[in-house]
Length: 311
Image (tube, rainbow, N blue to C red; front, side, top):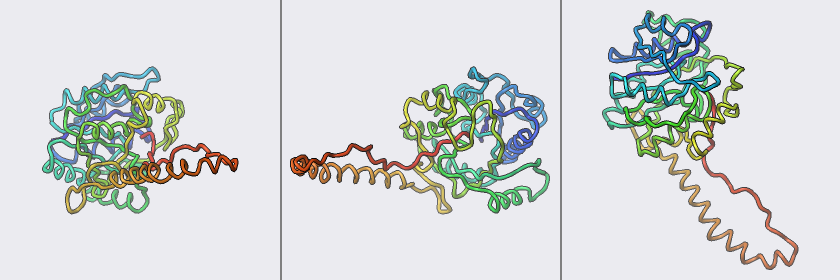
């Protein structure tokens, strides 16, 4: 049904705990789940052998040592057993509601991009998946003490094979690339379904490697800026606020938020064109005679705020 693919940090310490938690949660979603782990990081081969995952040791790297996403996306779609593939960061725990969202989306359309907001939660110990209530316990912890991030924090992408075969050379673990993913689907006229209201995805909080200049919630480090440069333009950055559809308890419905912002842009343009600028032209001689000058200021930005982050 679904092939998950991801890459990981070395499996040691807290990183090892939360990555194993995430991988096992995906395997438990359904008997027809395949998981591909890219990279030869410490412990990767052993974890794949233990959990029955497909290990792809080879991955292409930036000179800094960080990994390129375009290789992993192309290779995963080439070797996947299933038509639907899902890239997820290796710190995201998913539950049965994710599978339900996939099934509803698949019965609605054949081709789509499924995304959702994450819940930042402190998880410090290995999850005992043998407990029948492990999922209820963790969901309760996320809702009681976790925090649901905004629409610019995108950690998983489920899509039908063929959508992301020609990606720019974007770097995993740094900012901006996830916004490009949303833009690419919209550009290709692929419906983007935000399942945040029906899917609780737990992001297990963790630290960041200082040698890469990473700061949570910021995209100003050098590698994030390289991603932004390779995307071509800031206009190629979108968030889940601009998804075409939303999954609700009533089914998949049209998301009108993007149209609200488009209307705001249109109204602003009309006011400027038909009222403000004619007024300036009409009063210019009087204002000049009085020694007044129009002050130049940057155009008003009525687009929704774009959050940037490194996952």
